[in-house]
Length: 241
Ligand code: UDP
Image (cartoon, rainbow, N blue to C red; front, side, top):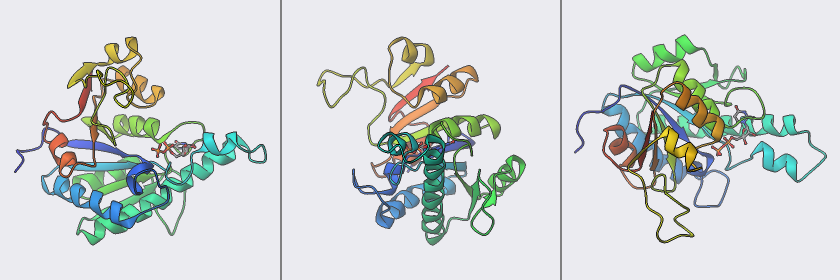
């Protein structure tokens, strides 16, 4: 029983880790289906939702190229982007199984698999109540899908960037190492930077700060949390201008 959404248009960043079982890698359709049920509730609450898929459950360009000189860094990043398309396809079917209409858009052209990302078409889908799954990041190497999410948030004029993670929000210190670490309910971008806190990748944070896009960091694994976060409940941490 959640009140009406606090946001009209939302970008949800789902990391690769939300596509697999804890620390396992690969894709677990059980996990994807679980996340999809949460997303269904969000869409039914009337929010316009675009989802940026990560790919770290399959491959991260930086890590992959670091262990072998046989692959060029740029190539490894393209492989990472393709990994996000694989996740996007899995998410699309899971959402459609749950009765949620979707469109998959890729930043790298891939006819037969996904629509190309076209801003105006993306917005039109959102207005029609379709969930738009954004894959292949920015389409360019050397950045992450966090940055892609920040850029797309600005492009489609989302009210908030929601970062779904496995931790409960932004802490004063690493909660796994320091038992005295406290979670912030909200914090300003300035304080995040001055205290060197981990929110998302630095480029993404800078972009959101510069353009006044709030970031909500929350734990998606708790049932119903995506809906709660979008309804404006103070779970997780809101990073605000
Ligand atoms: N990637 C890229 N350009 C982009 C977005 C992603 O080159 O615009 C590559 C990058 O190598 C990255 C990989 O795709 O490591 C998978 O994305 P990410 O690491 O952001 O996934 P997540 O950490 O969210 O699972």
